[in-house]
Length: 264
Image (cartoon, rainbow, N blue to C red; front, side, top):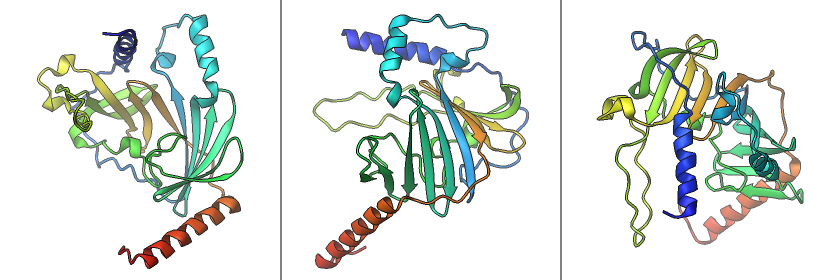
């Protein structure tokens, strides 16, 4: 094992150990299924933390080398995202560790934003954007897996009674052959699918408010997302330069389809 692999293994093992420990009561079940659909005219804020930042009663000793590393990449470290969904467009105002911010607009099949350096309009692919992953327009895509299959029970999370849903790391490791196309890792397992659930590694946990059925927290091996209701939604407008660029691209695609008789 090389040095890089050793470092990765240490980081991974640390992250596994820092998942929130709860003992959900399985006696009570949700009265209705969780829905990750975002209603029209909704605003919400996601604050992103590292697992150790929320470790109760555990003061983290500052490491100068780590602090320097975090400062170096502060401009690319997402700390908070202010989301607003209205009229088929999701606006995301992304706040970074260096107190800078960046706004992008998510539509069906496209990201629109102004380049952070040049201000030029950019039309991007949501599946592989250099600005980070997109979780959809009117869906909480990060919580699309939450279903009865993964339900554990009721537990308190930061003082709020929550329904707890949890995915475990799959027990089967996909072996990658360098001579074949990479394979996707198997999806996270439910506790009932594991041979040894007591010692299984937690891949993700969702805490859903018992009364409102709205997300409270989403934990993975790398991050903790904390959800809050945003301010009252105010009408927002996509910058005209972005709309003009999107219109021109749509016209160019339509002409190409017409020229080559490409069926829809």
